[in-house]
Image (cartoon, rainbow, N blue to C red; front, side):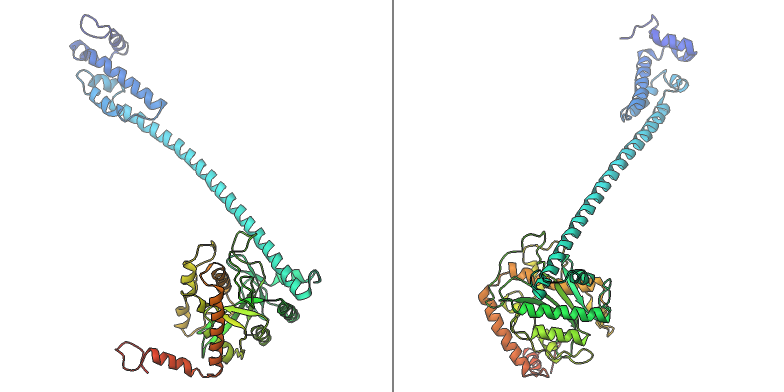
Length: 439
């Protein structure tokens, strides 16, 4: 406890007041007493705390109450250690601490961003290496089929590499066209185009010699069916099932981080007559099984399409895989399966068809953007995973093949599409309630 003088004042306080000539009136009046000494000590402690560490919120109201004590108003004002001084020091300390905290947080944030960027760069590098490795394997497979194992000229591989594009999963597709067909893929000269056709012809003839050869197939264009138009054809060899027995190869391919085969795919421009002839050779081959999803509209176009791109192709040995599954929409079928395609976009909403068709314009008018080209070839990946992971069995696919033959037979006898109109009429008979289609 402080040592008090006979008049009730702390000796230390009296000596300080005498040196600074402060508080003479208050001290002689005898109103400060031990409260004044305690206030001075608390104020000094508060100021020191504000400089050495973060300001303490409880010091400000305590200093306010002490500064209002009898005998301390004048002393606090002259000594400069009252409420305003304490708050000023506390504010300066907050600013210093805030700047230091912000500086530390900024440095930490920059470190995190650098680590994230390095991680993304490493993942991109690994993805590029994987894509290049798959492309190399796909081209090797193509050359082995076309020329025989190890018999292909060394110049063919780099030549094919020049005209390849990538799907959303990084799988490579050879673009076959005599004009600019896909953005960022160079158009082939007349000599290069003839060489591409020769290599494709070699591959088809070599692939027909495989026992149970099968191809995934899909088409894109405007309003597939009678009066519609196909613009592109997508093909890719697959090992998902045996082409003759239709025995499924269940499970996903191993040796890669994604679920797609490494076989080189083909992206064909149907504006070119020579490419159409190549497609005709593939689609009419009885030794290669073609696997399509929802094939009726494509069949009608392949058989009866006229206009600027006449086709006149009679498909043979085709399986409409959609007939073997309960869920008919490919997008919904994919959603019901395990998520094995991390980078594969959803099918629905990729192309705004109404935006183009409402203006009487083609949605798939070459040259195609990278986005539309990927949309076209990605359906082959979806069909691949449905076959490998979906609910269908070999027996259902055999029945689907028989049903597909019946559909093709019916279309062969109906060049004008009357049977399709009759089917629509039966679904929407005349005289039903208002708001429905009438005939």
